[in-house]
Image 1 (tube, rainbow, N blue to C red):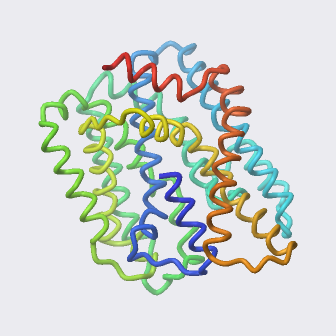
Image 2 (image 1 turned 60 degrees about the vertical axis):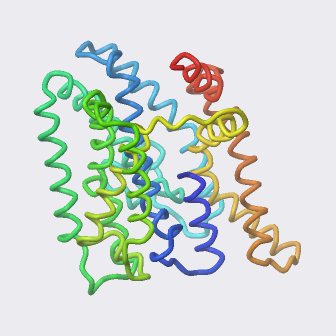
Length: 342
């Protein structure tokens, strides 16, 4: 999903066009939604037994989340400030470096794509309460899930008008937390109700996954991105996104050898890839211009993609591993866990 966001952005910046009828145009929106679902799911799986009503467990959770998010967010924000020509107010800079912009207005993000990190910080703040509620009453949590789905359905119709279909008109509404909370809570639900979901056969889940992918790719939508984020189309894609992660998780697909190593590596560097690829594109574009190189589509696309992957690998090992993972490689952790599960 992080790689698909890169492909979407690079194609959009190179062509100046966003075609919502194409798969990459759709993933430009819903890959980030899948981030939220995966976040809710994985946090639930990891903290379901660790987190309880004792405050020190909450402290451990929040400390790890802050060290996971902030070093790279600070790096991307600082680099964007250095590259941008237009000044930012002291208030906006303060809110971005503290992460409070997500609680106030995610649309005031500085680094490209950081609005989703602001939303993620809000979800982190609510996660312990939501998890404890689920542990005490799955029925109550199910009611919360339904309420958030209803809220997202309401915003899909109430916040967006076809008369204001240009991205500059709807973007600030689209990035608000209320518009995305269903994905995080939906991810938590996949983890909380996983024993019930496992009663459905693996073959059925694989069929659901294939069916969901086909509908997501072929659902008729106008070329304008407005039609991806509003009205009944939004409800359809929201449902498909939740179904896609649910079916993929319960299909229990296993990769081996080089395929396993590649996907584990790409998963490990995905946070870096998501936040840093816009900066890499700007740097490569400027370098091409300065060198007088006639930039063809594929020339810049491939160069910037390889550079983004290399830089993400570097920053993963020298920021995320050092600050968050205690100098333990996430790929190694993932491989060990996979072997234990087998």
